[in-house]
Each structure stands twice: as C-alpha cells, then as structure tokens.
Length: 236
Ligand code: HPA
Image (tube, rainbow, N blue to C red; front, side, top):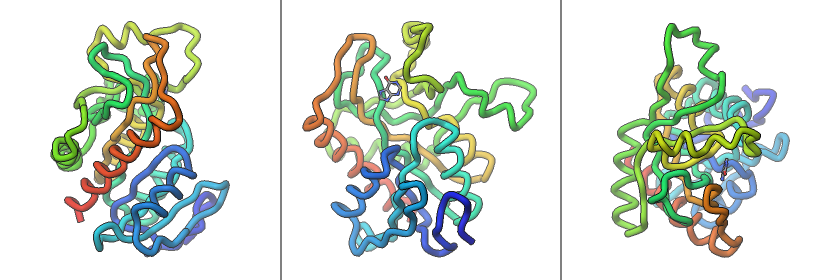
C-alpha cells in the first residue's frame, strides 16, 4: 500500500536502499549507477528509484534533512516496504582533528541531542549502533578504493545552526563528525530488527572554517556512493 509520503507499492522497492538526504542526489545515483532505474516516488519531491547495480536490485531514495524526516521515510521502508538494509549516504562536518575535507566517515555509532529515543521509554540512555555486517563491508570497500576513511562515533544533531557552539565538547569525546540523520535511522533499524549504516563524506570543517567546492564535493560523493553500492552487493 502507498503511504502518505510514498506512492510505491510493496515490491517496488529493493531489499537494500541507499538514502542520500538530497532527493536530487538519489536521481543522480539512479541515473549514473543503476541499470534501468524506475522512479517509484515523487510525493513531496522525495524521489525514489529502483534499478540494478551489477545485476543486483538496489533502491535509492531521498531522506530529507534531519531525524524527523529520515525517521518517517526509513520507518516506512523497513516496516511497510520490506527493506532489510538502509545505507545513508550523506555529508558531515568534521569534528575530530584528524578528519579532513573529503574524507569518508563510517559511523558505527551515533550520539545525538535528539529526543527520538524517548518514544521507546527505555530506562537509560540508548546507544544507536550501525550494523556490523554493513560497516565491515563498507570498510573493505573503502580500503579497496584506497580512500581516506575513518570508522567511529558520529554526532547526529537536531540543529545545523547551533547557538551554543558545542562541537568542541563532542570533539573531546572522540566524535568524528556531525550530521543530522544517522541516530534516528539506527534506532528505526534496531526497533524493526533490520540493518542500517551511515557512510558520510566530509563537506566542511566547522571548527576550522573550511568547506569544499561544489566540484570537489561531486568527486568525493562518488567515492562514498561507490562504497555504498559495493556494500549493498555484500548483503544481497
Ligand atoms: N552540521 C550538521 N550537519 C552537517 C554539517 C554540519 O556542519 N555538515 C554537513 N552536514
């Protein structure tokens, strides 16, 4: 059945879904990497496509920005459309000193300032965690590509423009980078008994005041997309 946010019907969407924040990046991945992509969703412009990568069915769908948005789309993919694996492909700001522009971050855990976990009424602090199977496959793919990558904890924030300027505090805790979606994705995956991972390319260094040009972003995005697609093949 279609949902209020997605006009796909069950069967339209592959077992493994790549999720960029930007729906136009979903279109880019579909058109540049997938064989015979079919667009299954245009509701709210949140484009979704299914095609084949090296003969294996893969979907790619925009998530929008922030945890409420990826929370909706990934919940529906896991619980209404039978998705088993969701791999977020997005951008992050560097937090750790050793993380440079255009590096790739594989987020095995996602700290957060979001209240998303409160819905589960847990008697403690939940630690949103990626799928080890997806993470270890992504590490192998990153090694095979020879790109600079880091594996560790990321910070999923509800704010892009943060009044308190708290990044230095997360830096002290060894957090690699900041983005806005992974924690909710990891919680939805855990609750549904499914698998998730965020693979991020570093688009800016907020603590150093650096950012990439649009052209540079395109190339490092390609590394990340190719790592995600190769990862998708391992869980088919
Ligand atoms: N903050 C939050 N999300 C981001 C950033 C950032 O600096 N860069 C890329 N995504």
